Amino acid sequence: MYKFLIKRAEAVIEALPYLRKFHGDLFVVKYGGSAMTDPELKDKVIQDIVLLNFVGIKVVLVHGGGKEISRMLEKKKIKSEFVMGLRKTSPEAMKVVERSLSRVNSEIARMVKKHGGRPIRFTGRKGGMIRSRKMLLKGKIDIGFVGEVDRIKKAKILTALKKGKIPVVSSIGIGADNKLYNINADTAASAIARILSADKLILMTDVTGVLDKSGKLVSQINSTSAKAMMKKGIISGGMIPKVSYGLNAISAGVGKVHIIDGKLPHSLLLEIFTNRGIGTMLVK
Image 1 (tube, rainbow, N blue to C red):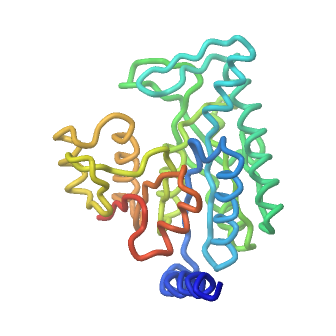
Image 2 (cartoon, rainbow, N blue to C red):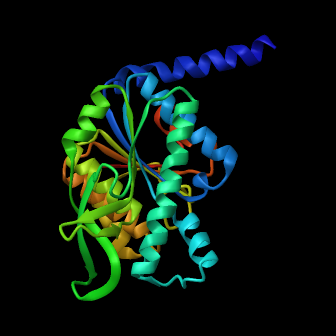
């Protein structure tokens, strides 16, 4: 029994240098994938977020809700169509996106509160946190009400953080035309991290991180190597946009970018507060 307790104490001691190092830092966490659908994983992720807040790390939680949106679209018999990995969003689909992400946002805020945190919700028109503009793929392909981040209400987020609150931001923007736009959650999180000059951007995914040509996890990679791996096709598929968002964030002043597997319980804490980490850290 004591051996088990001693191991738990040693785990806390291992975290001590990181607790000291990151105290007062600002992290932007993109929450998505399986970690949003598995009830046990959801609870653990929110516990991690609240813990980071309690130890003095300012956290902005940005979420999508792709699986919930797909489920609701199917229920409404609205066809889902993807172009270059982005959901084509008709006016009817946008209404479903808004309702779905509002529901997800509300649930996340409720869970944060349950674990002792103080959430503040920003979703769609509520708070109007993200100002967006219509996105045209390759400058000409229209995929409906899909947007990109134009600007965010930085002062609102900073005020909330100063008060010890946890902003919970859904990936919906509002345009100059007063219409809502569906924004990819990785895109939104990266933009928010850039605008806030965050110390860390953490992207939760359903994969372990960046893999080398032999399939082995790359624990740390710099921007030059990452670009070379993309050029050679070693970084491919759905990892390309995530690494690209990370590179954009770092070039704009974000300290470090972490790509982690959200399917692993307490992956946030394991990546940040242990010597080895469990994902890929992208640095300058």
